[in-house]
Length: 177
Ligand SMILES: [Zn+2]
Ligand SMILES: [Zn+2]
Image (cartoon, rainbow, N blue to C red; front, side, top):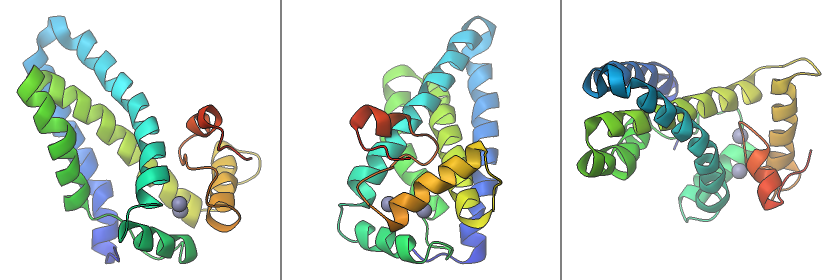
């Protein structure tokens, strides 16, 4: 939805704070012996985020009514502050990932899963902001991502759904560079 400037940038303040608090609390709960496993879970969920990002963009943002209309607007007005409010993304995350994992496996596991997924989400919104607002030089990682995303926005909406990487587009045959 259309966000004000504070709404648009609040993700970049709230998510690092939530991740930091969860990481400290989760590592204390896990204890020294379980810390390596906790870190492996974070990295695994960070990787899992890249698939989540692909699936959400391909099947939710482009197909679910109302959400599709908002996403279509972002495709046209790519620099306006249309986005997902922090309370909504955090709420969905809490209901879909954090609380279910907490109930099944305890707080340490839930904090690790949430830290990984939220780090991935923060990375995604940061890259997405940069490729729409910055002018990266050629050749660079950011330039390649910007070019891929511009093709998705303006040439063909059925390609290049991944924003932070081309990996899942290659796996599912939707990559075009
Ligand atoms: Zn799109
Ligand atoms: Zn975009």
